[in-house]
Amino acid sequence: MAVPSWDLRIARASELLQKPSAATELLKFYEQLARFQKSIYEELSTSEDHDVEVLIPFFGQLLALVREKGSPQLRTVAEKLAQTGREDWLELLQGVWQHHPEAQDLAPEYLFFAKALLQPYAESLAERATGVQEGTAPQLCPFCESKPQIAVLRPEGDGGKRNLICSLCSTEWSYRRQLCPGCGEEHKDKLPVFVATEFDYVRVDACDTCKSYIKSIDLTKNGRAVPVVDELATISLNFWAQEKSYHKLAPNLFGV
Image 1 (tube, helix red, strand yellow):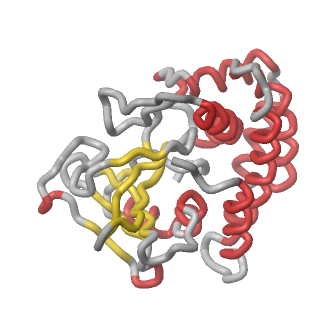
Image 2: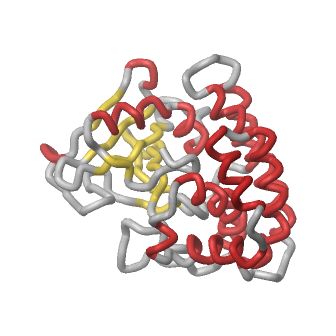
C-alpha cells in the first residue's frame, strides 16, 4: 500500500505547527529532518546500490543538521559520533537494520541517527520490492521484520479497517482490530482503548496482558491526518500512557 509522500509529511508538520502545542519544538525539528530524509529517498530511488553502506555519505550531513536544529541531548551524541568515523557509523547502521540485539539496546539518542537514515533507505527498497508476503510473525513488518510504529484505521464499509505501519520502512499490512500486536491477546476486557478529548481521532490501544500500547490514527474521523506526523504531534498521549505503566510497542524516531 502506498504511503504518504515526503511532501505530504512535510506539509502536515507545517500545518500542525500553525497551532502551538506541547509538540511544537519536536515538529519544527521533524519538518527539517523530513526534508533531509526526502533528499536521501530521492537520491536512493534511482540507485542500484542496495547495501546499507550507501548511507555513509549522508551521515555527516545528518550530524550537521542535528548540531544546528536538534535537541541538546541529540547534539551531545552528534558530537560523540563526529569523533568516531565511517566504521563505527556503518556498524551502527548495520546493527539496527539487521536487528542485532546489542543495537536494539542502544540509547534512543543513538538509535535516532541510525533510524533517521535507514527510514528513507528502507522505504525506497520496500517500494521497489515485489511479491512481499506476510510472514510467519504477523505482528512484524512483512518486508523488513521491524515492529510496527503505529496503527491506522482506514474507511471500510461502516467502520474502519486496521493496518499496522512499519517503524522503519513504512510498509502497511492488515491486522485484526481486536488483537494485541505485542503478545496476541484477543480478549476485549484486556485490551482497553483510551481517547483524549483534544485528540479524538487518535486512540491509545493498550494491552493489560503485556502492558504494551500502540497509537492508532483514525482516518475515518480525520482524513487530513498523516499517521507518522500526527503520532509525533500527539506525543502527550505517549507520556500519559507511560504514566499508566504501559510501554510503547516501538518508540518513535525520537525514542518516545
